Length: 251
Image 1 (cartoon, one colour):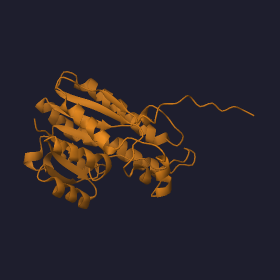
Image 2 (cartoon, one colour):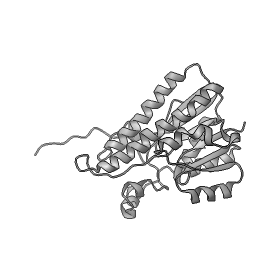
Image 3 (tube, helix red, strand yellow):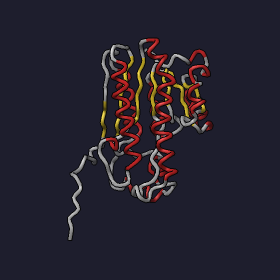
Image 4 (cartoon, one colour):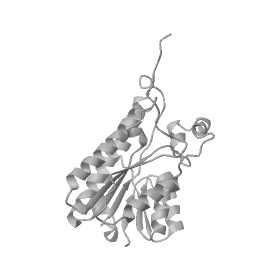
């Protein structure tokens, strides 16, 4: 069955790969993001199954207007993939940039909330739909420098589980997708404010997950029978695992 899927952050990385995979699966995708030229190129490459839609998820007014501003034939969104998000900085919390913190919260938390609130009522009214939220293993496993990024993703995970509690008895599903180390995107370059050497060092001598792996997971959860809900899906590459608690011994 062909679905109409709304993907945020579709101009690169996970969002681009998810769009490509879902179109290959036979679905229609509203590819949303801030970089119009990239969205137009994606739509030109994939054809009429993609609708390019310029959107900044931190623009509350634009997000709230979505149900009435999408073309009529695209308004019944079956699946929302809340993919837009970012990490900024790795300094310890006592040196971290407040501006970076504010940007992460505005995108990872507030933007995701507003997107969900904009499109969820329509799903409930139609008694069918699926919200897929991109969280992270950082939601559960802390690490130095992760502070607000990890906290924002912990919000995503808990928000997802609470959405499920609200939606019991409806035909609307919610999945929290929690990837670990993923390469092949701009994630670390963005985190290190454009420092390519620092970004590359994160993945040196490792085989991380890649955007195609994330797209495969999204494709799988969407394709399951309508009575099956995957609440949480945690993914890591084989080179990664959770570690022991930190101990600092005094000299």
